[in-house]
Image (cartoon, rainbow, N blue to C red):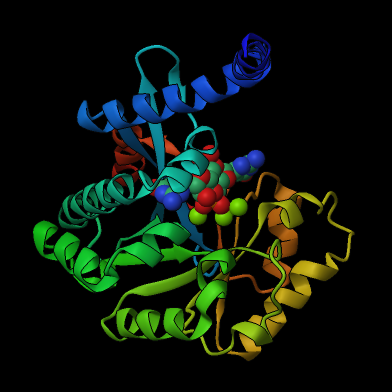
Length: 280
Ligand code: C2E
Ligand code: MG
Ligand code: MG
Ligand code: MG
Protein backbone atom coordinates (compact mmCIF):
# COMPACT_ATOMS: atom_id res chain seq x y z
CA UNK A 1 0.00 0.00 0.00
CA UNK A 2 2.77 2.34 0.93
CA UNK A 3 4.39 1.46 -2.37
CA UNK A 4 1.24 2.36 -4.29
CA UNK A 5 0.81 5.64 -2.53
CA UNK A 6 4.47 6.33 -3.16
CA UNK A 7 3.93 5.81 -6.87
CA UNK A 8 0.94 8.08 -7.00
CA UNK A 9 2.67 10.71 -4.99
CA UNK A 10 5.59 10.54 -7.34
CA UNK A 11 3.25 11.08 -10.29
CA UNK A 12 1.36 13.92 -8.72
CA UNK A 13 4.43 15.82 -7.74
CA UNK A 14 6.51 15.13 -10.77
CA UNK A 15 8.00 18.62 -10.97
CA UNK A 16 7.39 19.57 -14.58
CA UNK A 17 3.77 18.38 -14.60
CA UNK A 18 3.11 20.10 -11.30
CA UNK A 19 4.43 23.38 -12.63
CA UNK A 20 2.24 23.11 -15.71
CA UNK A 21 -0.93 22.31 -13.78
CA UNK A 22 -0.46 25.01 -11.18
CA UNK A 23 0.52 27.56 -13.82
CA UNK A 24 -2.68 26.99 -15.74
CA UNK A 25 -4.79 27.14 -12.61
CA UNK A 26 -2.89 30.14 -11.46
CA UNK A 27 -3.35 31.90 -14.79
CA UNK A 28 -7.04 31.09 -14.84
CA UNK A 29 -7.47 32.57 -11.36
CA UNK A 30 -5.46 35.61 -12.24
CA UNK A 31 -7.58 36.15 -15.36
CA UNK A 32 -10.73 36.03 -13.24
CA UNK A 33 -9.26 38.61 -10.89
CA UNK A 34 -8.09 40.73 -13.80
CA UNK A 35 -11.66 40.91 -15.03
CA UNK A 36 -12.95 41.95 -11.59
CA UNK A 37 -10.20 44.50 -11.15
CA UNK A 38 -10.65 45.85 -14.67
CA UNK A 39 -7.05 45.22 -15.68
CA UNK A 40 -7.88 44.64 -19.35
CA UNK A 41 -7.52 47.44 -21.84
CA UNK A 42 -7.92 47.88 -25.55
CA UNK A 43 -5.36 49.00 -28.11
CA UNK A 44 -6.65 50.22 -31.45
CA UNK A 45 -5.03 49.71 -34.84
CA UNK A 46 -6.10 51.77 -37.89
CA UNK A 47 -7.61 50.25 -41.01
CA UNK A 48 -6.63 52.37 -43.99
CA UNK A 49 -8.57 52.69 -47.25
CA UNK A 50 -6.20 52.38 -50.22
CA UNK A 51 -8.48 54.44 -52.47
CA UNK A 52 -7.77 57.67 -50.63
CA UNK A 53 -5.13 56.69 -48.06
CA UNK A 54 -7.35 57.61 -45.13
CA UNK A 55 -8.10 55.76 -41.93
CA UNK A 56 -11.70 54.54 -42.00
CA UNK A 57 -11.81 52.46 -38.87
CA UNK A 58 -9.86 50.54 -36.28
CA UNK A 59 -9.50 47.06 -34.84
CA UNK A 60 -9.89 46.59 -31.09
CA UNK A 61 -7.06 44.42 -29.72
CA UNK A 62 -7.15 43.41 -26.07
CA UNK A 63 -4.18 43.70 -23.68
CA UNK A 64 -3.81 42.77 -20.03
CA UNK A 65 -2.11 45.27 -17.76
CA UNK A 66 -0.95 42.78 -15.16
CA UNK A 67 0.39 44.15 -11.86
CA UNK A 68 3.01 41.36 -11.85
CA UNK A 69 4.00 41.07 -15.49
CA UNK A 70 3.23 44.38 -17.11
CA UNK A 71 1.47 44.53 -20.46
CA UNK A 72 0.53 40.98 -21.52
CA UNK A 73 -0.32 40.36 -25.21
CA UNK A 74 -3.49 38.43 -26.11
CA UNK A 75 -1.68 35.35 -27.44
CA UNK A 76 -0.56 34.71 -23.85
CA UNK A 77 -4.05 34.53 -22.37
CA UNK A 78 -6.80 34.37 -25.02
CA UNK A 79 -6.23 30.64 -25.73
CA UNK A 80 -6.66 29.75 -22.03
CA UNK A 81 -9.63 32.10 -21.73
CA UNK A 82 -11.15 30.29 -24.70
CA UNK A 83 -10.48 26.89 -23.12
CA UNK A 84 -11.94 27.81 -19.73
CA UNK A 85 -14.92 29.78 -21.00
CA UNK A 86 -13.62 33.03 -19.48
CA UNK A 87 -13.61 34.36 -23.03
CA UNK A 88 -17.37 34.86 -22.66
CA UNK A 89 -17.23 37.64 -20.03
CA UNK A 90 -13.93 38.97 -21.43
CA UNK A 91 -15.37 39.10 -24.94
CA UNK A 92 -18.46 40.89 -23.72
CA UNK A 93 -16.31 43.44 -21.93
CA UNK A 94 -14.31 44.11 -25.13
CA UNK A 95 -17.45 44.50 -27.24
CA UNK A 96 -19.12 46.90 -24.81
CA UNK A 97 -15.99 48.97 -24.26
CA UNK A 98 -15.11 49.15 -27.98
CA UNK A 99 -18.65 50.25 -28.89
CA UNK A 100 -18.62 52.98 -26.26
CA UNK A 101 -15.24 54.23 -27.45
CA UNK A 102 -16.29 54.16 -31.10
CA UNK A 103 -19.42 56.16 -30.32
CA UNK A 104 -17.37 58.88 -28.56
CA UNK A 105 -14.82 59.07 -31.39
CA UNK A 106 -17.56 59.13 -34.03
CA UNK A 107 -19.26 62.05 -32.33
CA UNK A 108 -15.98 63.90 -31.88
CA UNK A 109 -13.96 63.14 -35.03
CA UNK A 110 -15.62 61.15 -37.78
CA UNK A 111 -19.25 60.01 -37.97
CA UNK A 112 -18.36 57.15 -40.32
CA UNK A 113 -15.66 55.56 -38.17
CA UNK A 114 -16.11 51.82 -37.62
CA UNK A 115 -14.70 49.61 -34.88
CA UNK A 116 -13.81 45.96 -35.52
CA UNK A 117 -14.06 43.47 -32.67
CA UNK A 118 -12.59 39.94 -32.75
CA UNK A 119 -14.99 37.13 -31.86
CA UNK A 120 -13.86 33.78 -30.50
CA UNK A 121 -15.42 30.44 -31.46
CA UNK A 122 -16.61 29.68 -27.95
CA UNK A 123 -18.23 33.07 -27.60
CA UNK A 124 -20.09 32.50 -30.83
CA UNK A 125 -21.22 29.03 -29.74
CA UNK A 126 -22.25 29.84 -26.20
CA UNK A 127 -23.64 33.32 -26.35
CA UNK A 128 -26.74 34.62 -28.09
CA UNK A 129 -24.98 36.95 -30.51
CA UNK A 130 -28.09 38.97 -31.31
CA UNK A 131 -28.66 39.94 -27.68
CA UNK A 132 -24.94 40.47 -27.03
CA UNK A 133 -24.68 42.86 -29.98
CA UNK A 134 -27.99 44.60 -29.40
CA UNK A 135 -27.01 45.27 -25.79
CA UNK A 136 -23.60 46.67 -26.81
CA UNK A 137 -25.21 48.94 -29.41
CA UNK A 138 -28.08 50.26 -27.30
CA UNK A 139 -25.85 50.69 -24.26
CA UNK A 140 -23.34 52.75 -26.26
CA UNK A 141 -25.64 54.47 -28.72
CA UNK A 142 -23.49 53.21 -31.60
CA UNK A 143 -25.44 52.41 -34.77
CA UNK A 144 -24.91 49.01 -36.47
CA UNK A 145 -22.92 50.58 -39.32
CA UNK A 146 -20.28 51.49 -36.71
CA UNK A 147 -19.57 47.88 -35.76
CA UNK A 148 -17.57 45.24 -37.60
CA UNK A 149 -17.17 41.67 -36.37
CA UNK A 150 -13.99 39.74 -37.17
CA UNK A 151 -14.67 36.02 -37.30
CA UNK A 152 -12.44 33.05 -38.21
CA UNK A 153 -12.85 29.83 -40.12
CA UNK A 154 -12.64 27.85 -36.87
CA UNK A 155 -15.65 29.81 -35.63
CA UNK A 156 -17.91 28.97 -38.57
CA UNK A 157 -16.69 25.53 -39.67
CA UNK A 158 -18.08 23.35 -36.84
CA UNK A 159 -21.58 24.39 -37.88
CA UNK A 160 -21.54 26.26 -41.13
CA UNK A 161 -25.32 26.46 -41.61
CA UNK A 162 -26.13 27.79 -38.18
CA UNK A 163 -23.19 30.22 -38.23
CA UNK A 164 -24.33 31.44 -41.61
CA UNK A 165 -27.88 32.14 -40.45
CA UNK A 166 -26.71 34.04 -37.36
CA UNK A 167 -24.25 36.08 -39.39
CA UNK A 168 -26.95 36.84 -41.98
CA UNK A 169 -29.17 38.33 -39.29
CA UNK A 170 -26.28 40.47 -38.03
CA UNK A 171 -25.41 41.56 -41.57
CA UNK A 172 -29.06 42.39 -42.35
CA UNK A 173 -28.99 44.55 -39.29
CA UNK A 174 -26.17 46.58 -40.83
CA UNK A 175 -23.06 45.13 -39.19
CA UNK A 176 -19.93 44.53 -41.25
CA UNK A 177 -18.64 40.94 -41.23
CA UNK A 178 -14.98 40.16 -41.88
CA UNK A 179 -13.23 36.80 -42.16
CA UNK A 180 -9.94 37.17 -40.26
CA UNK A 181 -6.69 35.22 -40.76
CA UNK A 182 -7.77 34.09 -44.21
CA UNK A 183 -5.50 31.52 -45.81
CA UNK A 184 -4.35 29.88 -42.58
CA UNK A 185 -7.32 27.50 -42.32
CA UNK A 186 -8.41 24.64 -44.50
CA UNK A 187 -11.33 26.09 -46.34
CA UNK A 188 -11.30 27.56 -49.79
CA UNK A 189 -13.18 30.68 -50.66
CA UNK A 190 -15.89 28.73 -52.47
CA UNK A 191 -16.50 26.81 -49.25
CA UNK A 192 -17.42 30.08 -47.59
CA UNK A 193 -19.64 31.41 -50.35
CA UNK A 194 -22.83 31.08 -48.29
CA UNK A 195 -21.52 33.36 -45.59
CA UNK A 196 -22.53 37.04 -45.74
CA UNK A 197 -18.94 38.30 -45.82
CA UNK A 198 -18.14 41.94 -46.49
CA UNK A 199 -14.36 41.50 -46.24
CA UNK A 200 -11.65 38.89 -46.14
CA UNK A 201 -8.51 39.70 -44.21
CA UNK A 202 -5.41 38.08 -45.69
CA UNK A 203 -3.30 36.70 -42.86
CA UNK A 204 -0.07 38.55 -42.17
CA UNK A 205 2.04 35.46 -42.82
CA UNK A 206 1.26 35.82 -46.54
CA UNK A 207 1.94 39.55 -46.55
CA UNK A 208 5.29 39.02 -44.82
CA UNK A 209 6.29 36.67 -47.63
CA UNK A 210 6.25 39.66 -49.96
CA UNK A 211 9.81 40.90 -49.72
CA UNK A 212 10.46 43.08 -52.74
CA UNK A 213 8.48 45.08 -55.22
CA UNK A 214 9.38 42.96 -58.24
CA UNK A 215 7.86 39.86 -56.69
CA UNK A 216 4.65 38.42 -58.12
CA UNK A 217 2.81 37.76 -54.81
CA UNK A 218 0.73 34.99 -56.36
CA UNK A 219 -1.25 34.02 -53.29
CA UNK A 220 -2.46 37.47 -52.19
CA UNK A 221 -3.19 38.23 -55.85
CA UNK A 222 -5.32 35.11 -56.23
CA UNK A 223 -7.19 35.76 -52.99
CA UNK A 224 -7.91 39.37 -53.98
CA UNK A 225 -9.23 38.58 -57.45
CA UNK A 226 -11.33 35.65 -56.23
CA UNK A 227 -12.80 37.72 -53.40
CA UNK A 228 -13.59 40.59 -55.75
CA UNK A 229 -15.28 38.26 -58.21
CA UNK A 230 -17.55 37.21 -55.33
CA UNK A 231 -18.26 40.81 -54.34
CA UNK A 232 -16.10 40.60 -51.21
CA UNK A 233 -13.58 43.29 -50.25
CA UNK A 234 -10.05 42.53 -49.08
CA UNK A 235 -7.99 43.77 -46.15
CA UNK A 236 -4.28 42.95 -45.85
CA UNK A 237 -2.88 42.72 -42.31
CA UNK A 238 0.76 42.93 -41.27
CA UNK A 239 1.80 45.51 -43.88
CA UNK A 240 5.19 46.72 -42.71
CA UNK A 241 7.01 48.01 -45.78
CA UNK A 242 6.60 50.37 -48.70
CA UNK A 243 7.26 47.45 -51.06
CA UNK A 244 4.38 45.42 -49.62
CA UNK A 245 2.11 48.43 -49.85
CA UNK A 246 3.07 49.06 -53.50
CA UNK A 247 2.28 45.47 -54.47
CA UNK A 248 -1.03 45.44 -52.60
CA UNK A 249 -2.04 48.65 -54.33
CA UNK A 250 -1.21 47.12 -57.68
CA UNK A 251 -3.28 44.04 -56.79
CA UNK A 252 -6.28 46.28 -55.97
CA UNK A 253 -6.38 45.42 -52.29
CA UNK A 254 -9.05 47.56 -50.58
CA UNK A 255 -7.70 48.15 -47.07
CA UNK A 256 -4.44 47.71 -45.23
CA UNK A 257 -3.48 47.35 -41.61
CA UNK A 258 0.04 47.15 -40.28
CA UNK A 259 3.03 48.75 -38.65
CA UNK A 260 3.79 50.68 -41.85
CA UNK A 261 0.87 53.00 -41.13
CA UNK A 262 0.56 52.45 -37.39
CA UNK A 263 1.05 49.90 -34.65
CA UNK A 264 -1.91 49.20 -32.39
CA UNK A 265 -2.09 52.22 -30.06
CA UNK A 266 -3.47 52.81 -26.58
CA UNK A 267 -6.62 54.94 -26.43
CA UNK A 268 -4.94 58.29 -25.84
CA UNK A 269 -2.41 57.90 -28.66
CA UNK A 270 -5.04 56.62 -31.06
CA UNK A 271 -7.06 59.71 -30.32
CA UNK A 272 -4.08 61.89 -31.30
CA UNK A 273 -4.08 60.16 -34.65
CA UNK A 274 -7.80 60.92 -35.04
CA UNK A 275 -7.19 64.55 -34.14
CA UNK A 276 -4.30 64.80 -36.65
CA UNK A 277 -5.24 62.45 -39.47
CA UNK A 278 -2.34 61.19 -41.53
CA UNK A 279 -2.73 60.12 -45.16
CA UNK A 280 -0.91 57.11 -46.45
P1 C2E B 1 -5.61 39.19 -35.17
O1 C2E B 1 -7.03 39.52 -34.94
O2 C2E B 1 -5.27 38.48 -36.44
O3 C2E B 1 -4.81 40.55 -35.03
C1 C2E B 1 -3.66 40.90 -35.76
C2 C2E B 1 -2.41 40.82 -34.93
O4 C2E B 1 -1.30 41.26 -35.73
C3 C2E B 1 -2.40 41.74 -33.72
O5 C2E B 1 -1.66 41.10 -32.69
C4 C2E B 1 -1.64 42.96 -34.23
O6 C2E B 1 -1.02 43.70 -33.20
C5 C2E B 1 -0.60 42.29 -35.09
N1 C2E B 1 -0.11 43.19 -36.14
C6 C2E B 1 -0.74 44.23 -36.73
N2 C2E B 1 0.04 44.81 -37.67
C7 C2E B 1 1.20 44.11 -37.69
C8 C2E B 1 2.41 44.23 -38.46
O7 C2E B 1 2.56 45.07 -39.33
N3 C2E B 1 3.39 43.31 -38.19
C9 C2E B 1 3.24 42.35 -37.24
N4 C2E B 1 4.25 41.50 -37.04
N5 C2E B 1 2.11 42.20 -36.50
C10 C2E B 1 1.10 43.08 -36.72
P2 C2E B 1 -2.18 41.11 -31.19
O8 C2E B 1 -2.76 42.45 -30.84
O9 C2E B 1 -1.07 40.57 -30.35
O10 C2E B 1 -3.38 40.07 -31.23
C11 C2E B 1 -3.15 38.72 -31.50
C12 C2E B 1 -4.43 37.95 -31.66
O11 C2E B 1 -5.16 37.91 -30.43
C13 C2E B 1 -5.41 38.59 -32.65
O12 C2E B 1 -5.03 38.27 -33.98
C14 C2E B 1 -6.70 37.93 -32.23
O13 C2E B 1 -6.81 36.66 -32.78
C15 C2E B 1 -6.53 37.81 -30.73
N6 C2E B 1 -7.28 38.89 -30.06
C16 C2E B 1 -6.89 40.15 -29.80
N7 C2E B 1 -7.88 40.84 -29.16
C17 C2E B 1 -8.92 39.97 -29.03
C18 C2E B 1 -10.24 40.06 -28.46
O14 C2E B 1 -10.70 41.10 -27.98
N8 C2E B 1 -11.02 38.93 -28.53
C19 C2E B 1 -10.57 37.76 -29.09
N9 C2E B 1 -11.40 36.68 -29.12
N10 C2E B 1 -9.35 37.64 -29.64
C20 C2E B 1 -8.53 38.74 -29.61
MG1 MG C 1 -8.49 40.42 -36.04
MG1 MG D 1 -5.95 38.81 -38.39
MG1 MG E 1 -3.74 37.02 -38.02
